[in-house]
Length: 253
Image 1 (tube, helix red, strand yellow):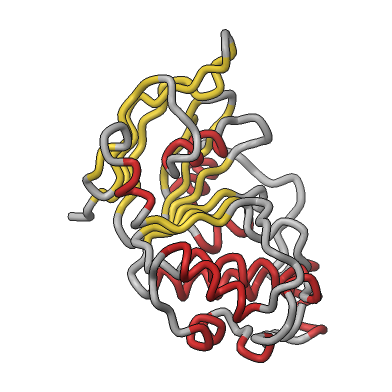
Image 2: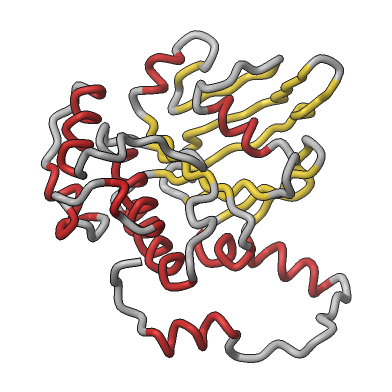
């Protein structure tokens, strides 16, 4: 039986009379990659920010690794890592300096080169943050979420704006984080990304969860309902062509 590491029950968030999150409930299992999907304004980022202790809820109960959000928010902060859609780093500092800064903020000793090696940035250790490409910045942002050795990592649209090569590289990084036993919660607008990475996904729309299952189960249920794609599915797509022609190895993005 899988252990529940996050439990959300009847979570609501109102802004005045507007209901952004309308009484949703779901569990996240320890060691899985869980996706929270939905169109803009669906309430998924608000939901994550509440669990991350960054935003106040209106009502409901949230438990994170057995800790009650209302009573133990500081304890929750110590066991999670959060990568936001936009990360603010001092652009003139190099990566080693930034890691030292975050290590001090967390009061957590860290081996900088080992951390950079994990995200394939050891050769950029002395490079300034502002000098790196979009894919490198995203990988470094994820690296900083691992400094405090979190049990849970939250990634909010981590591959937005990246080219296909950089996206695939980041997928491998996320899978490697999960292999170390860390639970990963991800939001994305890329359905292929969710299908490749997530063990289960919750689809939100207008503040409600309208489906929750594994990607395979959702697809099988749709096919069983009689759905047919208007165009035959080929064994490859244009992104596969791009990756095949430009090379599959990790390289600077």
